[in-house]
Amino acid sequence: MRVPIEEPGDDRLADYVQLREVNLRRLLEEEHGLFIAEGDKVIRRAAGAGFEPRSFLLAPRWLDSLQDVLEQWPDKPVYVVSEELAEQVTGFHVHRGALASYKRRAAVPLPELLATDTRRIAIFDDIVDHTNVGAGFRAAAALGVGLVLVTPTCADPLYRRSIKVSMGTVFQVPWTRLRSWPGDLKLLQDNGYVAAAMALTDDSITLDDLAARKDEKLALIFGTEGHGLKPSVLRQADLTVKIPMAGGVDSLNVASSAAVAFYATR
Image 1 (spheres, rainbow, N blue to C red):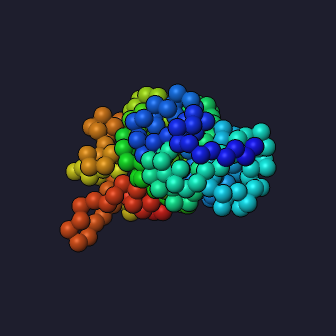
Image 2 (cartoon, rainbow, N blue to C red):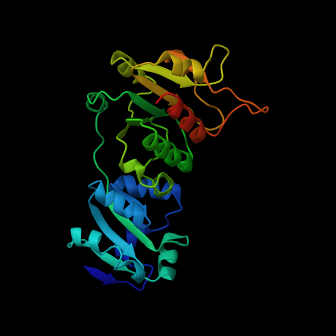
C-alpha cells in the first residue's frame, strides 16, 4: 500500500509528528500504544521480533531494500515522502530516511518473567536519559543479562532514541516496567536473587568481591545519573557494590558502569 504524500500537515502522518519533543511523544505514544523505529536495521529488528507495524514512512530510496519487510505486511500503509518532507514532519533530519510506527505489546507481569529462572537481571532505576537506557540494553544483550527491569520513573526503553542507541536490542532482551519500587525487590529476593545495588557507600564491597561470590542468581541495580540510588533502595538491597577506580575518577557513566558490572558477573 504505497501512498505518496506531499503535504507535511497530512493527518495520516500523525504518528511521526515532532519526534524530538519528548513530552509530546510520550503522551502520543502512550495514548495510541505505539513506538517509532528509525533506520532500516532497527525496522528489520522490530519486524523480526514480531512487532506489528501501524505504518511505514520511507524516502523512495528505501523502498527496494526494505521490500521484503513491507511484503510481510501488505495491508499496512507505506507513506512515501521526500527527505525534506520527513524533516518537516518529524522536526529533525531523518538521516537514514526510514521510519516505521509499530504497535506496543502489553507488559508482561514480573512473576511470569521470573518463571523463566534467568540468572542475571539488570534494574535501571530512574535513569532519565534515553541514550543511557538504550546503551544499557545493548550492554545487557551483549553480556548475557537475561532480563531488564525499569522502575516507574525510568525513561522509556521504546522511545525512538533509546531504540536507536540500543541498535534494536530492546526487542531482544525481555523487559518490563516495575509497578512498585523498591517494593518489588522483595519479590526478586523471595525468588532467590541477591539484590546488589551499585553505589558508593562506606560499606560497599568491590565489584571483584561480588564476582568472587559467584551468586547463582543476581539482580544488579543502577541508579539515576548524578544522584544515584535513593536511600530506600539501598536499605532494601542485600549489598552495595562499587567499581574500583584509578586516576582520581570517582565514577563512570551509568551505561558504562552497567557494561563493566555485566561483564564481571557474567
